[in-house]
Image (tube, rainbow, N blue to C red; front, side, top):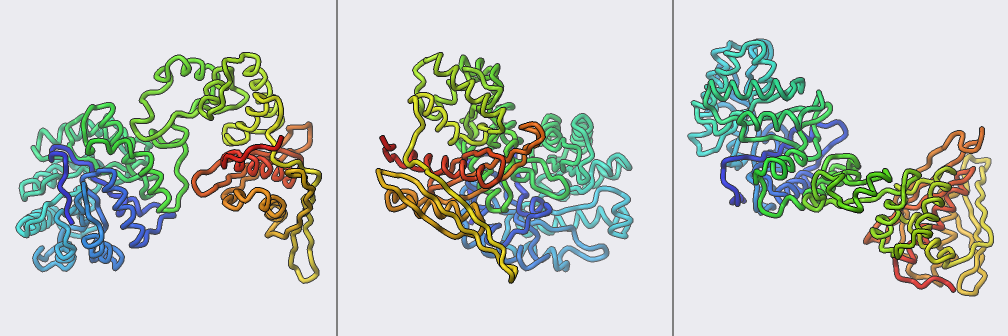
Length: 534
């Protein structure tokens, strides 16, 4: 179904994640993936979603058929992508142009050659015939009641080689009825000042409505997109999280955030900008790529503060070290605790975690020194909030938080003559006045320890049945103790509703893993509201 936008037609946010973004190495979208992403993009509020090239492959053809039936678009219009007709033919008889019409999409984007050498070498036709191909295809689709956008491929390189011909392509497309002509930096080699100058000149010389499609090969795709807007472009083509061929495309999220928050231009329906972080991460999950932690606006580190000097200022006024309120884009401010932390960092982090330090300067000072001492030994708390919270509570309450007392543990790995392996762990501990000995096997020594600890405690603490180890990272820290190596383990655990990270450090990976596991179980019980042992 076609959406009715809450916004007027004066400015377009056009997403091409499903076509251009899918060309990123490592992304392989199924039809179900494309439908899921389309729903997220529509929820975000983009005006146009380019779904792919119907007729070019069965997957895209199926996507358009299913999208029309399965998605009730609230904000976006679905766009089909294709090319101008073949040289020497007519648009009416071209099979791929017919496939665009048969897709059911009411908006069609045509790619057209605007670089003279590409016309002659890739299309193997004349410059005049290329202009005829543009005019014929646009006018034919318009006559069929479709809205038409024209992507001028390699426009900026073509403009540099033959500016008059590049402009002739723009003028031809516009005069044939194209609603927008998009200038494409296909090779991604342009810089913002160059983009701005060319867009301004082409706008003045052709009178066409212009858009911008920027690749990120110079790291300037977002800046180039905004430079084009400064020069008069009113249509921006982007991809979610900057996905795309080679190093990617202009990233939809910082472009939209800049337009709304820096330019004061409403380009999304009211309230949708606050969904941006959620949408970014949801799409990353669909394409099976870890969300970039340092992505502007939506990364988990976008509003994370580590330096003690910054924390002191943020305690007075968060705006002193943040360019926007993170809630505007659905993100949150985070305080990182490390050996760079000062009193303000600890106080703010305690507040974030819900631990009242009561303005106790002596207590805060002890925590600062404890963190610095532990980080010198190899611990890291900026990535292990749960372990830090346990440390903080231990200092605040004068004793460690305990649900069980470990007497001993051991893990055994056995290599057998037939080449197979066996891993077994035994845990001896005290909990609720009982001495418990539990043994379990696992896929490896750490998994065996995890299972043995679970076997030992689940009868007394049934809340542990919900816990799953979801990530496990090991890092060897060289030279922490003279010439010896120290191992740091980070474990992420989930209870189905949230996730937390714990850290362990020791001279071997098993001992470090045990520390992280012990913290993970302790924090899980704390999170479940279980009262600690006396």
